Amino acid sequence: MHMTISEIAKLAGVSSATVSRYFNNGYLSDEKREAIAKVVKETGYRPSPQAQTLRTHRSGMVGVILPRIESTSIARVVAGISTVMNKNEYKIMLANTENNPDTELGYMKVFDNKQVDGVIFVATVITGKHRRMIRDSAIPIVVVGQKIDEADCVYHDDYHATYELTEMLINKGRKKPAYISALKEDRAVGRERTKGYVDAVRKHGLGDAADRIVEGDFSRESGQEAMEQLLRDCPDIDAVISATDTMGVGAIQALRLFGKNIPSDVMIAGIGNSPMSEVISPTLTTMNYEYEESGRIAAQLLLDKILPGQSEDRASGSTPKDARGAGQSSADGSDATCAQILLGHRLIERESTVGSGDKQSC
Image (cartoon, rainbow, N blue to C red; front, side, top):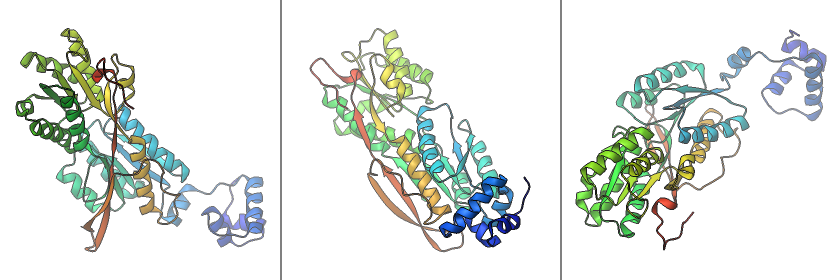
């Protein structure tokens, strides 16, 4: 039935302003709320989304820019985002960019044109163009996966995750470790994790291991190719750290092809605690990242910008390892503070690094 707010107000015996407050979750007496609800139910009235957008200056939608929709870690981030957005009656629009920076910038531009109320950017590569667009955006943006000063961000401790994995394998007596890195353009997964490996081997006097690094592109196939190259260059490698579980699974396949026994000949570990790490044989030692929690926190940070003081309580879960503000200058020249939420990690040791005398940890 096509009706107006004025007609609903007349049937309910209240003012149009009261009906407007009803649809915008404003304060009303129980009596008036029940009267309006009764009329709405009887007439089947639904407010026009376009009219609500014009009135509230909100679309009720947020954009989520993703690098690869098929990634299990990205799916877990989106699951966390969805949990908080659904709780706050917000819809999400997913933009899959296939790790193309130009496509990411294109979606930022579209979303910035007031198509959504805010954006969560699950980032891999942050260029100068990204930073300028984020800084100049007319809508709030929250970044997941990378540390950035221009916006609120949620990220993991990539450096120490890899450092600790490498040190664990060295402490098990491994003297010839190697590393499968991610794209160096990715500051977190590429550069920070690689730096953690390099610093760990150098600390333990294994500086030559800093040269045993081959880059992959996040895929299982690239992990297998990287491992094959490492084995050709240095057949007596006795430990491998992979920047991701997916590439680690590929590395396990290569080790089998070369007749290497895991873990007696070569121990191997990854990062991310992906489902594949639990089903591959041998099961893969990994660092667990709270991907769902990073999505929940990012969603709440964004809603705090869109609906200050109105959104549901902040997502509960693991406590951030570090949370601090970075003073920034906003577009109008005033000082602003961007939240930088650093999440921790947890070692899950499985068959790929557990010898006969060791015990698995979780």
